[in-house]
Length: 411
Image 1: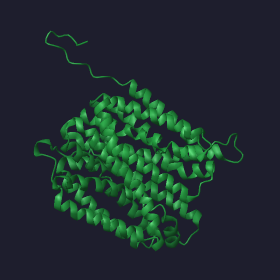
Image 2: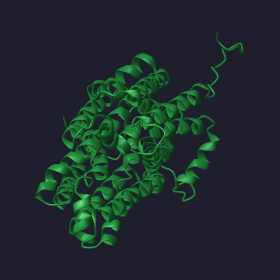
Image 3: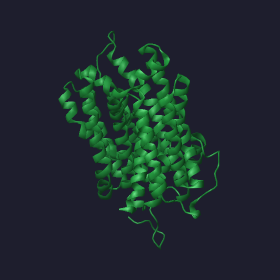
Image 4: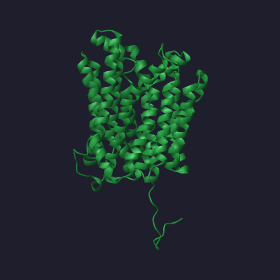
């Protein structure tokens, strides 16, 4: 059992990182009104600033945290980030001004950029053929945290708008204690490399991957897929209200069902599918499920039918871990942290851009004086992004097979 505790710690850390995104959603309007003394409209504007600042920090600091873990090891980075995160939640629980709350979200975005280091730990401790399943567990933990965050925030919000922050601080501190007790260092001295600030930012790191011809295209595929998949948190509540008249309770039930299906796919099914089909076919299959789900959700007018297609939509979650495994397999052992940092920044960039894109499409397709009323239009936009991702993935250069002793390529 003890040998599993490091993995438990890693997955819990990722879950807490994800919870930091969603735990404030239910209570933030009330908290901002309490602190700022303004209207709900002003609170919404501040809420957008706070959400964007968190995602921007994750985008900017993902490669930095990943590169620091390549130099100093995974253990000190993960434990330090958890300590900062626990303190940050306490600051936000006590915040008496909007600027202090904004500072809390900025620091929280930086401290929460350890998804890359957690994934690098998985890469360090897994064989290449098992990394896809390991990354699937990490994605499942992230998805679970993303779902649990709003649920916990909503339940604890009945105790007051600051209660979720106290709970998050306690959870981060408890996980820090667990990490101090059970987490080993997974990075060997031989695989450490010198820290380079030029490589430790999202733009410098992107410049480094030009030496690997396949990675830029695959990262573009990843970005397109994540832009599409982020349509759910961006517009789901607006879409289901406009299309089906769902109330908040029903919206919560549907998000919980989606989260459970995602956890099943990423935590258990993905490893079996990759073992049977390989990473490349799994990417194609996942994008195929995404196209199907987005087409249905874009056109359906029956809420029960939309809910019935949640499992199909969740099967699209196979795409990202399989892409992750392909790129990790083709990256040197001493650059895994850097690569995971790029993944973190790509995900954060999608989280910044997708809500802007999808809410604009939704607003255009549902405005009273518009030419058409189509609440599912953002899903059709996501479908187009997935088709583009699939086309780029299909057109990527394939590695040439090795020659036999006579210098011939095998048939």
